[in-house]
Image (cartoon, rainbow, N blue to C red; front, side, top):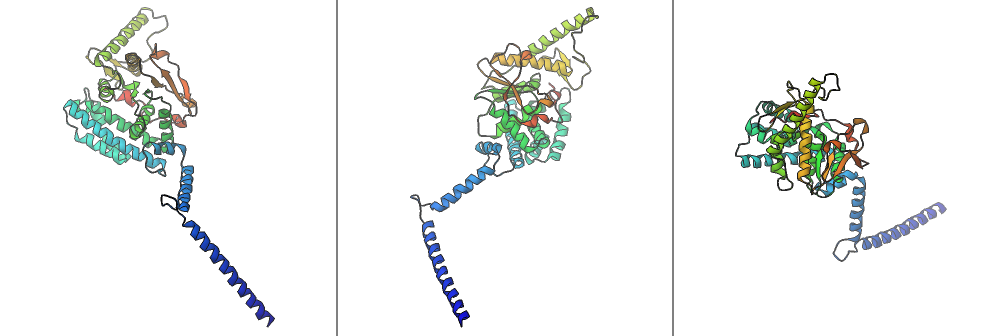
Length: 379
């Protein structure tokens, strides 16, 4: 009997505790139904806010920046963000190619359409296959007129696709955001390498922030690139003309002949012509002036003409600020090196300074086709 009495007592206690718990739950639920003035449950709003804070905390800083300039889903991976941006750039450059075709009264060739479709799909094997016939045709001298006119948007789509393929996605985003984030409003950015041109272009053209003017000095000696710059930015800065290009060629050629005459007249003195300069047998770095009166060959000669044209561009736009992305030694990566200012006495004497000390480490990476701007700049 005592045992049975104890069992009964335990049952009574359990019933009593259960009643208390039910009462507490009822009170809690009644409080949870309290609503704010706009009809939203306070507890629900608090829960949503907490989840939002947790979500933001998990997003890397570069993703937050990209989300602020047009990425609708902050939880996208870096790879998904890059793929989306590449597809968007392909559509943009295809539309630009059609606008240029209308301006210059040409048709967009079918192989160019296939190329843009491959870039938009983001499948690298298809991009390479679509690019090969275009690259082969563009190496012809002279290249087909329609391809030469449209080569600017084609090359930018290719360069962006190549960068997306070669670079780890997060490093690509960090580098591009590091460059663009270092620019002041209204500043013109002059890229000095393939990644220094194509990666900032990819992010610049697919975000909702300020669209900076982006130029590459490596392509200035090509007349088709000058035409492309004028089409893109003719209403934003004083662009270079074919007459400017002819003057740059003539200035370089005169200087080269003077130095060559010195070396021939004084063979025992230090050579003034650089090794390999203006090689007539160069098939890669070979360009003719716009009037056809001069032809130069070799990387040194082409870059010397580019240097003169860049100086002209700066002098024609004294009211603008330029950020010049200078080549960085691969061992000094982790920095974005610029020279920033208005109107320089000599591009040759520019000394870079670090304006983004915590710049991305992506400068350690190098595109497999590091000289495409000049290699494909036949005109």
